[in-house]
Amino acid sequence: MATTLLDRTVTKMRWRLIPFMLTLYVLAFLDRANIGFAKQAYQLDTGLSNEAFALGAGIFFVAYACLGAPANLLMKKFGARKWIGVTTLLWGLLSAAMAYADSETKFLVVRTLLGAAEAGFFPGMIYLTSQWFPQRTRASVMGLFYMGAPLALTLGSPLSGALLELQGVGGHPGWFWMFVIEGLLAVAAGFWTFAYLDDSPETARFLSAEEKRTLLDQLHSEESAKATSRIADAIRNPQVWHLAFIYMLIQISVYGLIFFLPTQVGALLGKKVGFEVSVVSAIPWIAALAGTYFIPRYSDRVGERRNIAAATLLMAGLGIGVSALASPLVAMVALCFAAAGFIAVQPVFWTMPTGLLSGTALAAGIGFTNMFGAVGGFLAPLIRVKADTLFGNQIAGLLTLAALAVLGSVAIMALKQVRATPVAPAGGSRLAKT
Picture 1 (cartoon, rainbow, N blue to C red):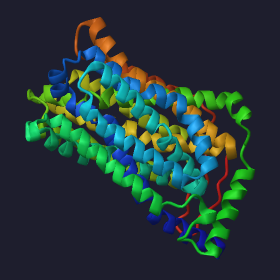
Picture 2 (cartoon, rainbow, N blue to C red):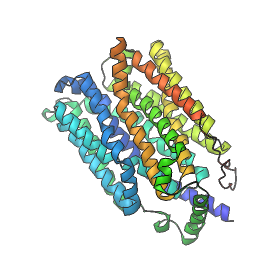
Picture 3 (cartoon, rainbow, N blue to C red):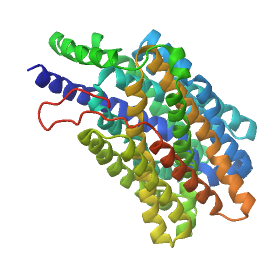
Picture 4 (spheres, helix red, strand yellow):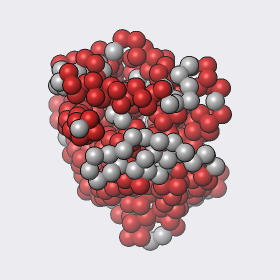
């Protein structure tokens, strides 16, 4: 009976929390990646060089990297509702402020501040998931959350493209309206957070006393089986460093492609970036939606993490490489596999640190791992531009990203195997690590 009640409770939490988390991630990803759509027109209007654009695209991750772990510890102290609400308000305002960043200095300053404001959001969401959902369901839960990235780029691509068509409205360029409107959507979501989110299962307004007790018993039993709960132990743990290195390689492949995808698709089509190119650019993200839905669910069903994550990242690397070398049609198909791979690998990846750590160590460990990912995000556009410049062609950067993704797959295979008890068709089993 307790297991049945636990399943019902998890289902209720899915319906309550995942749409909320997904909406915020769509807005966060859209606000950090929309400069890829503005790239051509923005550089033309402001005189920004390719090198300055790459630096600004990456500098977002400098403050983001430094503040991720402290932000998670602060969320643990002040509560998820206030912390996520304030974070969302701030990043929305700063994203809208990009509309006024009409010089290189302003561009770099606003991108840095945006990274600082967003630093607490993503690691906070990963930590929030670990505090609400049993371990055996987390890959699929995080897979649904991670659908925010391809959704942002599937729905956001046409939206951003359409807003760029507002060229001249009110005497402003199209990119001005894109930044303002998409930023204000996040501001509205911040106010929604204050009214909607509960800090923890203990204070959840939508759970009954019996549901809370059943859920908390399961979560506490899992916490007691984990390796460590102290911050110092987490930082000294070599497996945490190994995971952080892998996540850095994943993020290099992610952002090395995302920031340049609209212009890459435009080159394949022989057209400038606008509404038509933005619609075609959405196709790989539709593939990513499918991959992000099915691959983590499969991982939960069979209780396997490492091999599935490695194979998924390998698929992404091969897709990136083929997209650099093939004809336009084959390149678009390869980009679909690449997008599906590097988005779907991440929810499976995050089951590893959340299955290893607990308590304050988990909050810090997630922030620490995410910090390395932010370093990867910073390096990604710089690596791609540098490789293209060094070899004097437009495919060297893509091939470099492909090689780093393959290296990440090898690094995952070097991890100790971590298994979760497969989710039973009815009922469900408790988590076990072997």
